[in-house]
Amino acid sequence: MKAIIYTRVSTKEQGKSGLGLEAQLNAVQDFCSTENYEVIKHYSEVETGSGKDALDKRPILAKALQHAKKEGAVLIVSKLDRLGRNVSFISGLMEQKVKFIVTQLGKDADPFMLHLYAALSEKERELISSRTKSALKVLKDSGRKLGNPINLDEARLLSNATNRKNANEFATSVMSTIVSYKEGGQTLQSIADKLNELGVKTVRGGNWYPSTVANILKRAA
Image 1: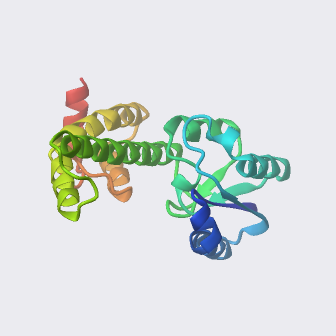
Image 2: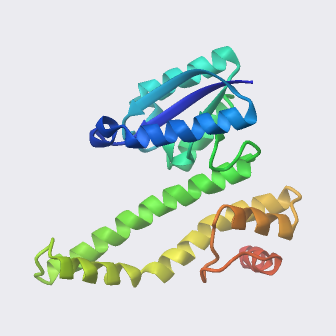
């Protein structure tokens, strides 16, 4: 099977150092060697390009996709966030009928896993940004000087106070995926196994079991 490798970093500093790109390339090359994929081209890009229209901001990725489609090859990346952290964007890539593999998830990752992992990445980005902005605003409004290490520690404590609320919001975002997967004929055990494989935690920070999946389904009902 032919393969095209795509690597990306989001800053010029990372691009100049080559460390991030080199690590990605090594990971994908090892994967291709193990799984017997024939690498026909490697595309590399230094671009942030976040959001639904990320493909418009990443001409190299667009070129890699076109090449893969023309050759009937699979596009391979080391991690899903090298493609993007937006669920809509990842869904759009799937609709282009170009198969892509994320080495971190393995070659057998199905659409459910890819969508869920994209949702996790998107939510993680939103939570980090939201917590940081909220905490810094509280400190600024109280007259604290930003940049002071002590104040930064306090900002982290303030951000942790919103974790429970964010966890509930995350559980709600995962709920629809769990419901759709159950309606697709998957068992409670198989859904729990997939969530655990992806490292998704329950609202209380624990592992998933058939009973916890059932509770989510009851909550949805």
